[in-house]
Image (cartoon, rainbow, N blue to C red; front, side, top):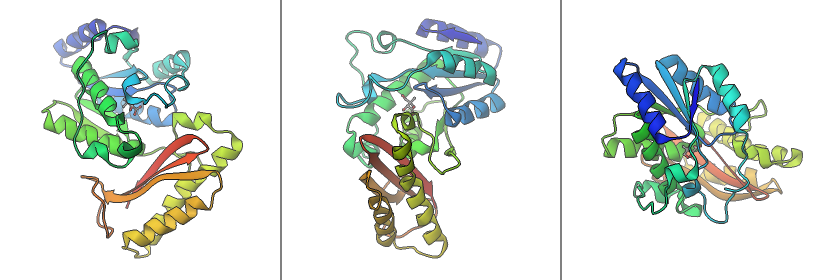
Length: 279
Ligand code: PAF
């Protein structure tokens, strides 16, 4: 396994892979890897000849009041774990490598980026699209793997790849959960024991919504009401949003239909967590 810091080194490595006719799987991450990330890495290693993982905490997707500086980091552990998984190349650029002085170009996906998480994080998806497009241009993967926990991110990146005629297949893989139901996230690290217990209201409210749908409930307003009541019964929780939308275009739905996305964002104290299900 090789670890590199420069775009030049990645491009040279990829050129050689292409010359040998190898397929490339890519998993972009911000590091502090957990079993959710590793499920993406395993899938890539399984399906592609070579796997590239990037570790870059992208400043462009954090607002000034957000947690860029305290975002958890453990590069050494990440490298060891990725080596065991059979990754071929790790790309760990510095901020100046990705955004050199005078950097000016940003991309976004209209409408899709202004909903759900985009309401309380207005520049977030512009930052995500920009870094992912840059990484796609550098790594030129055949397939890139993302987690379904960030459902809106996956929808937006698929649309970006399609609209910009990128030769990459963007795939979203299932959410990995703790036994308790809590969706894995690097931000769970910020929670103490009590807060972690409180955070179960996200997955619990979604599991109850799924049950209601399975029992025949189709009315979105009634399901939203149940989810909100469940979350609001947890004193440490504050709802950012609860939405029932079409999983393709993220437009709100009045009735549940096939492949409906039910997504929640909730603050547990000041830690913002997201979770979702597709019913
Ligand atoms: O999902 C993430 O960890 C990030 O948004 C990504 C895709 C690595 C871009 O910085």
